[in-house]
Each structure stands twice: as C-alpha cells, then as structure tokens.
Length: 211
Image 1 (cartoon, helix red, strand yellow):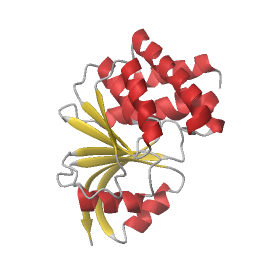
Image 2 (image 1 turned 120 degrees about the vertical axis):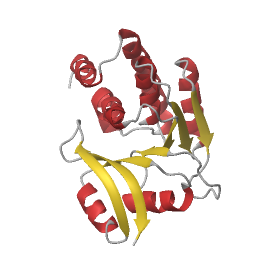
Image 3 (image 1 turned 90 degrees about the vertical axis):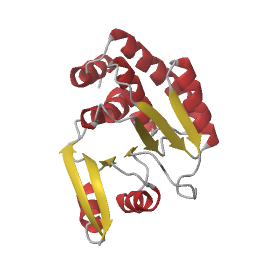
C-alpha cells in the first residue's frame, strides 16, 4: 500500500494533528534505521508500518478509560503499542502516563533514544517481566505480540496485585487461545475485531480467576 494512502488511513481512524504525523514520521525513520541491526519488526512489514504497526497499536485508544493514571506495556519491543499510544494520547491531551517494560537492553536504548527525540514523558523499565519476582502495582496493562494468552493470564494472575484490566492483541489463533484459556480460567472480557485485520481481535480483560 502506498505510504500516503497508509497515512490517510491512519488519520481517518485516529484523527491526529499535522505535528503528530510529523512525530510518527520521525518514529518511522528511526525504526527503519534501527531495524537493520535490532530486528525490531519483520522485514515484510517495513513497507506497511503505518497500518501494520502504528494504526494497529493506536486502535486500543478507544478502549482506554480517560480517568486511568498509568498504562503499562509489557514486552514493548519496538514501542508497540505503548509508544504509539503515548504519542496519540499526547495529541489528544489525555494525561495518561505510559510505562514500557522491555527485557532487551539494546531495544531499551532504542526506546529511550526515540522518547528523547520525540520529547515524550514515558518511563522505560529494562527487565524480564517473566523472571522478575517483584509484583506489579499498576492497574492497567497492554500486551501486543508478547506471549501466548495463557502465559499472559498466568503472569497477570501471579504478579498484578491491583489488576483492573489488560488489553491483549490476539491474532489468527485468538479464538482457540481464548477457548483453551477458558478451560483453566474464568475470564471476563470484551472484544472487538481489529481495524487492521479481520482475523485478529483486541480483547479487554476485566477479571481473571482460576477455576
């Protein structure tokens, strides 16, 4: 898809200012450059960053409660969805603090360089959340292309002391993942079809209890 069409598609769904589009273009440039050594995104998606990554990340903005204080992105990688959400939230003047958790020191450096370049107020924590024994005190989380749903649910159940909700991006295997998870967990959730792929969904989990 032509880049101009991609940007128009992004703006049709998310509706941001010209300055925010400029910030996202800087993000795109830094991402493409860093990807040559860091493998941040699949090479097959480089020509579709605006839809495959930026729009896909930003669509969860519609789920967000504007009264929440902090949103934690677990396994942030290239900054998806957390950093894109930070840019969009800033554009819409929504005072939600974004925290990124990433285990790779090299990816953490990329994220911090990007945050500095774009003048964002975003915290980055360099840790392997699966190995870290420390509990998570925040209330709201998001996970995209992180781990299978069963691992995410186990992680939240074990470590998120004050869990209010977690947004999880699910791909083509999402229906089966939910079915398998429901054998072990009582899950209260809402879901919607992804705006970028009819085979994918974004779910908002509000409660997790072991059966």
